[in-house]
Amino acid sequence: MALALQAAAAAPLVLRQRDGRRPRLLLAEDCDPVRIVTAAMLKGMGCDVDAVVHGEEAVRSACVRSFDVIVLDIEMPIMDGITAARSIRNLCGAVSATPIMALSAFLADAMQQASWSDTFDIALPKPANRNELHTAVQAALDWRPRVAADGEALLINLQQMSDLSAGLSASVFRELLNMACRDIEVCANQLTHLQKSAIRGADHVYVQKLMALGQSFAAPRLSQAAERVAAAGSLASRPQMIAGLIVTAAATAEALRAH
Picture 1 (cartoon, rainbow, N blue to C red):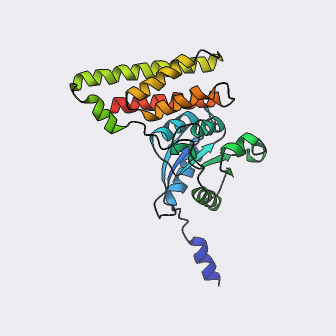
Picture 2: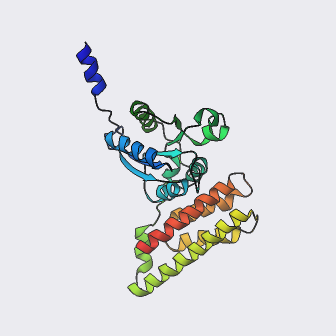
Picture 3: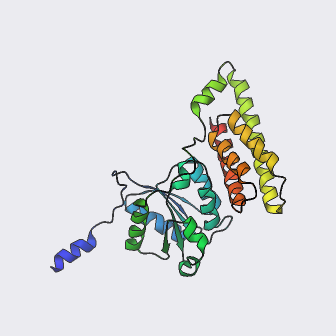
């Protein structure tokens, strides 16, 4: 009996998707030791892990790659976990339905806030041991996905991009893409400035321009994100939607330059 218990205790903890795939997780944690240890434990359970150090990097990563679970620390510099989670929820496409886990040393108090339960699917206090981490992540993997607000939106539609370049020399098309990238970044920078200065009513010009750029340069995720902001009017969620639009704009510019 004792040997059987020891064997059970020594059994490896493995995480798998329902279809048997290796899960891909995004982990955002600003504390280096915690991030390194948590990522190592998750990799030891059979996960592929992308680890970043703050919420803004997490939102940017969610824009360009699909994840099965997103794990966000709450207290982080640059962008905290709650803001990052709200920004991800406001992105267009399936990414907005990704299960998101809150990781915090102050979970008991913070979870009393309605904003947490409305944004996160599951929560785990830290520090967490291997068994607790395994249980929480498996629960997130088994979580019934939220219904995405929009259909899947590609960052760049390669077929449309090919159609756009038809009849143009490579150098001319490259210059057009560079101009588009500069315009996208200018709009994103202006929106960032307006967000920080709390100036209201002046951002619609840049939102409309990003919508047009997305439609013109085969970037459906950018155009959809801008459309959602334009339709939001004065909703309380509009600042988070703009934050998501800014990150989507940066990811779009990066993808266009890499095309």
